[in-house]
Image (cartoon, rainbow, N blue to C red; front, side, top):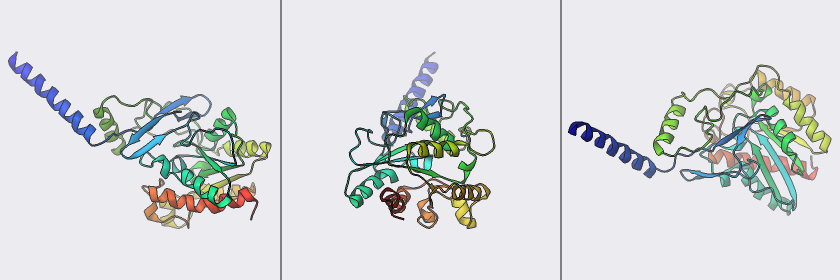
Amino acid sequence: MRRARWLAGTILVLFLTGEFALRMRGPWVRPVYEADTRYEYRLKPSQLSRNGKARISTNAYGMRSAPVGAKKGKRVLFIGDSVISGMEWVDNDSLATTLLEALLSERLGVPVQVLNASTPSWGPDNAAAYLEAYGLFDADLIVGVWNSDDFSDRMGFEAVVGKNPYFRERQRLLAWGHAWDEFLIRKGRAGHFPEGPPGFNTGWYGLRSLAANAGIPFTVVMHPRLSERFTGTWNAQGAALQDSLAAWAVPNADTWNALEDLHYADDIHLTVTGQRALAELLVQHVHELLTGIR
């Protein structure tokens, strides 16, 4: 009996010591998500958390932006996936959209609000369904930031929120829980990301129709994978998307020459310096569209 108590006490002390040590390393906090039957899922609205020094916050619409509020000048609405949404290591103040807001306001001489309605692994159909649900927020311009995969990245409504540790439904109470999630993610054992049926993503039609019916310009910024940069060309889906955008007469810019390999954190996501480089590319493209200068 005494040995069992000693063993239980030792395990408890080790557990508490580990919990304390993990908390001293800083919070391992990822943003949380909520499922939705219309657009699969989104970042949970009105959340505030920290991943180390990075602040992750959302407004009432689940955007990594300030509250929408009353329109005071120009408003630009961004849609997309994790490239423009930023990963958990990117502070809200370091997002390309946040930086762009200040750059555009200075250049135009009027207040410009940039809304970031994006979520990791979203395709055009997710974004179109989200905009159908909440409207276009009185935007003067809609900008989609996408990559080659988004030619055919379709919604499948597979349950991932609360199932995949990347798509947490709520924060873990214990640091041990965060550590376990990070272990699974880093070892590639977290489960797969949402994946819909193959084929062309008809959300492209939805986005074009929403913008056209509201009389709002719609533009796309194509973001190559690092692997595409190594080969020097878009993959088959990227090339097809480029051709489609040209056929639809959708203004299209790309980040190919604006970014360097060192701006990538992995095959597709950007570092903090990559987000700044993206903002510097976007300011000229968006400015031209807002002012009608071509």
